[in-house]
Amino acid sequence: MTTTATRPGGTRPRAAISAKTLRTDRWWLAPLLTVIGLTAWVTYATVRVFMQSDYWVAKYHYLTPFYSPCVSKGCVEEAAEFGRFIPDHPLIPYAALTLPFLLLFRLTCYYYRKAYYRSFWMSPPACAVPDGHKTYSGETRFPLIFQNAHRYAFFAAAIISLINTWDAVVAMHSGDGFGLGLGNLILWINVIMLWAYTLSCHSCRHIAGGRLKHFSKHPVRYRFWTFVSKLNTRHMGLAWITLATLAITDFYVMALSIGWISDLRFVG
Image (cartoon, rainbow, N blue to C red; front, side, top):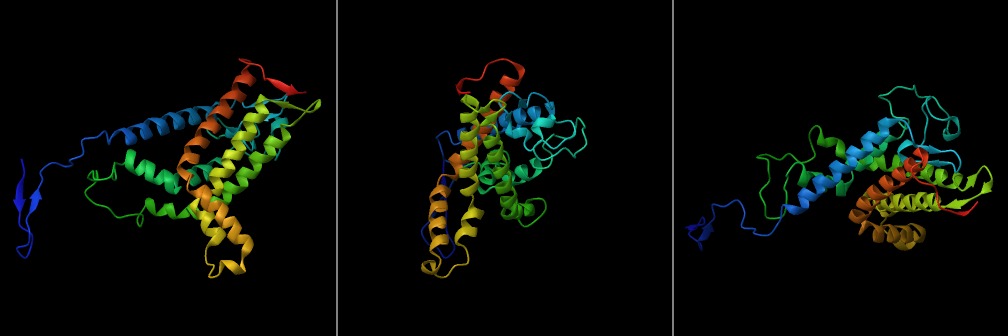
């Protein structure tokens, strides 16, 4: 039941609704699925990162992206393309050099911020649904002020994508020379998707076309900005796709390393 409330100045009355929201659709489904999806991925990734095993297939030079670059003194020597200089400790991931930057890049990503703000923090959970918090200070106070580090984390993510690309190239050359298997295809699909996600970043778009007054005087940057802008419209989809490709790539390499399956070879 609703009543009416008179607006200031005696203008037309407005309905006073006691309910928090009049939405009758399943507005809670999207936040719920986001919580389930992100929690499942983080759980799997955390377990795998700290397993410190089953990350390398010596026969085909397959290295899972969760352990790249493998710079711990506990790494298999053949998998350590960039040397081994981090102490070997159960609580230190083998790829401790890059994982913090990847985590920072993902956590501060504009899409992921929207995703976990709405799902985990209920701020707000959906359009036309009240915020789960009484106050809101934006991203101007600790700890959310660190969201502004996203523009810098982008450069680290780009370097890490180069490292993942190098891993895919190395995997094309096994001990018997050039080779191509299902594992290679999975590694390359993951790398391509990672580059698409990284380049579709809002920070990349700003770097490409920001602070330009005349695109006509910078045709190369304009073309790159146009390309990045097209990718940017798919940033949300690419964010989820890369989570899937990372997990699939890691699981495939792990399954090969343990001996659960054999790699399907096309060449070599």
